[in-house]
Length: 307
Image 1 (cartoon, one colour):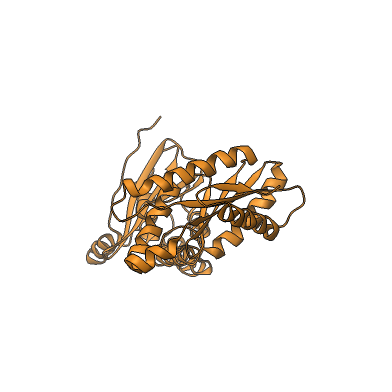
Image 2: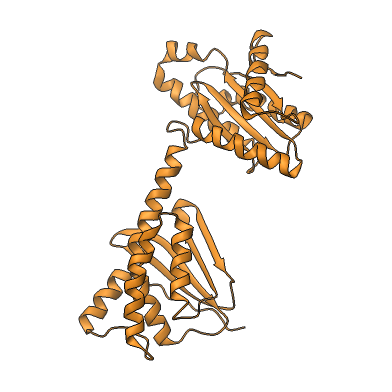
């Protein structure tokens, strides 16, 4: 296997150096092809704001000039990893930036070593990727923000509605169970009245963190509104969901002992519903909500389910 190498560059600096030397980094066989491809990329990459699609288009066009069997993009700050094609033995690695803005890392893979003329061509063409890549990341951030609760960082009501439709279809297609928990902080109004809304917000943020820490990575948590949260438990039947509900309830009850932002004990009431054979997202949500009201009526700080 050919050992990997790494090329770490700032594309703005590389462009300045090329301009200073007035030497265009063209492929030796046909400079006109490289220039034409660059113009095509400038147009093609503006056709999508989807990050993966932008990278697909870039790889597809570049592959007509330089053989690139595999490509990987990583942006640790945004928790993004996209892999296209095959990760083979040899690789060249670039840190992408635009001015002071870091855009992530791009790695090209193939079996044989890249020639110097091919690297020059890649670096020349990478300049066309910067603006589309930045725009795609901004668009992705805007989409994520539209589905995220600004206070707690968990999914919002819009994200819940989308997830319910998607997860119900998946559960039926795979014949796996699906459970929904509706959660409500008991007597939350007392916290706001006694300590103020700022402290109430701290309690909501800490509760969201506590709940998230008790869940699997495949589970999804949403703020339904006010002091209410919803948790979607994929591939989880009724009995297992009841165990999760009790674990969440106990964790929230104990959080005031370890979280300095919470000035008094906070408890949680939960309603549980497990998907029936024929049931809409709205019906599943309503059953969990009714179970929550039953838990409230029976004294709070407990979980209930309706069959």
